[in-house]
Image (cartoon, rainbow, N blue to C red):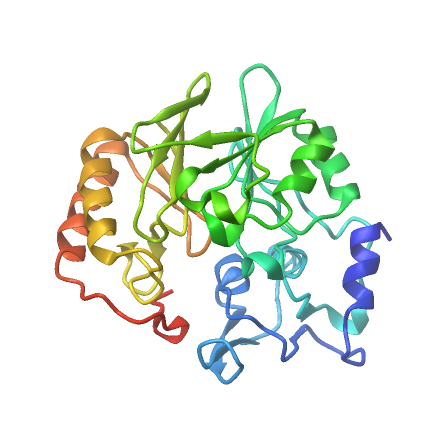
Length: 312
């Protein structure tokens, strides 16, 4: 077993069982349901929004088993368990290629509410990390060995800053954040200011996007990939781009303004959020969907924060 597999097995309080199972520590972060759809679903209960993940059925194919290991090694509370706690040495698939340029880090942290983090490979063989997984030195070494030397750690907003300094220091990388959320990571190396886009590196733009938080930022690479943090996401419930209207720390009105501006100024094909589903669409269709979301958000009321009302 590697260090991460040993940690996964050691953190269970549940005796070995015959089949895959989910324990009662679920944060309702949606990672498992997104990673293993049809195998893991929801039921009422838990302390996070009144919903928790549960096994719907056991895997029937090798592909379905691989999906469950993806979910298990991403789960922030290590709540997903294989039969008899069988953590084979090669069961950890991360970093997992989403396409030839983007990798999922897995190993989400409870300190970021289970946010998904990414590695973006650049043409020169280096990489950038967008938000961070749980901190493990072994993970930092693995990421650089398998993806490339990480030059920059890009934080999307204040909810996802945990472990940023440790990963940046381990990589010898620059740590980025917007001034609006700088109080959450005052040791950042590079601060994005105002509303003007900032070039992080060739083809990579930081695009300020206030709304979810005052300092939320989109990172857009090669007019293809948009790393959105919690600014917006693809909802498998509504089958559309959506925002977390019940979890807004700045202003839903500001979110609408940011959406309308981004719909006209940005080009991308992939929506890659910290929470919620990913989606790949042709750039022009994505633009039209952004315009539609901006229009819908104009009618959304300002709400008190309520995690249980999120439309995953």
